[in-house]
Amino acid sequence: MKTLFSVLGLSLVGLGLGLTACQESPKAIPENKIAFDSIQVEKIYHLLDNPDNPNCDLEINFVYPKDFADKAVLEKAQKQFVYNYFGESYENLSPEEAVSHYTDDYIAAYKDLEEDFEEESRRATKESPVGSWFSYYEMSSNQITFNKAGLVCYTICFENYTGGAHGAHSYNNHVLDLATGEAVTEEAIFHEGYQEELSKLLVDQIASDNNLTDAKELENIGFFSIEEIFPNGNFLVDETGITYSFNEYEIAAYVVGLINVHLPYESIRPLLRDDSPIAPLFNH
Image 1 (cartoon, rainbow, N blue to C red):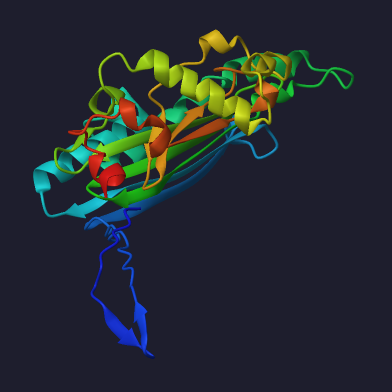
Image 2: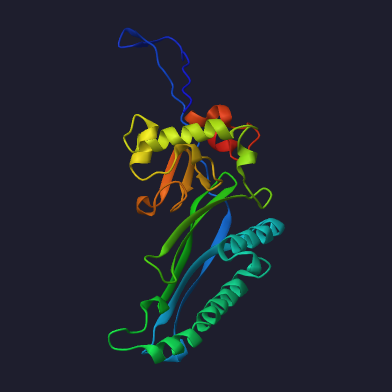
């Protein structure tokens, strides 16, 4: 926040001499004029189409840009949302087509288990029933986290189970520049050679978030080598700073879970490019 002090003039107040300070507040950043829509799917399929058999459960809640003044940018934005959510195989499809095709492909892949299920069912006994690993699920959604200053930030949340000890979870962040329709990358934000200093800031912030004075102690509470913690491109921005997300097994054991690290602009200002797409956020 910038504070400007100016002498407004000498004035008599109750026969006394007063000096008035004037404080200027930062202007609020308006929301972008872009509209979003969403598509929801919940699909359950039982192996061999028999309700007594194990099933898969697919849930999708896909939010995507629906309308924007610049139609060329809108087209690029939709393509990015589809690609980041569903993958390369679907990037040239409309949001509606992508959801439909992905749903069909998921069910088709699950049906590939039916031959194995029939074989295992023939060998099953009361003491050794069919394995529970035949029950699958997948839940995904995305959330708009910031929509100002010509930037749209969103997080894709993904959870699935395909057998094993536990399910998998991931949180993938994306920043879209509405001036170009392109993704905002670290290289567009930071000066060249930023990695080493930013890595140190991330490690120090993680240590502070865990009430540790020595970052090396992170390795005693489930983190891997602190030398392996570095910027991973998985970030969001807002008015206050940049937040990095590290998923399961990325820098720590599964039990530690998702790790979010918020770096205020004040702490990373020397690393930031003045011509960055996010400059309006740290210069306002």
